[in-house]
Length: 187
Image 1 (cartoon, rainbow, N blue to C red):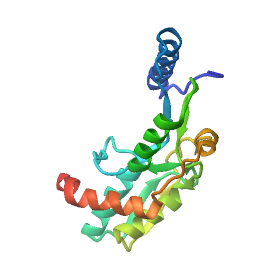
Image 2 (cartoon, rainbow, N blue to C red; image 1 turned 90 degrees about the vertical axis):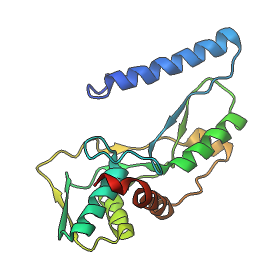
Image 3 (cartoon, helix red, strand yellow; image 1 turned 180 degrees about the vertical axis):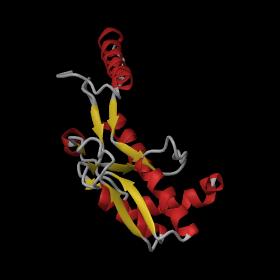
């Protein structure tokens, strides 16, 4: 810890930090081989599509799908669309986790991500296209943007030789198909 934790995430962050510390202590004291991983923002099948609690990808899939079904001419998103986010399909995260278990030695946590990010506007445009929504996207700049950038350092995992296998388009298509088959009934 090199600084203050964001007040909105403090309990969550403290729980994660405590867990990593506990793993390190067990490894030292009992010669276990616990590994702490820190995943980036994940999306995919079984995501949470609750309008009040969903994360970025699920929320956008649902917004664009509903707008398509209702033939709404416009979807409004908060902020400017300029914050950058690293997003990863859950199957890539699972693959990286198994790879780490088979290849990582050490007590340091390992980031699981892509090492690249996109603007929220770029992500929204990709989802709009995959859902087949023909309306426009409007950004409500009176609403907050949130953190300007969330991007993990992927040096450890990349040095071990792991690479992502699921492109953004393929991952979003997979998540949207799951949504259509399982979650759309929440409407």
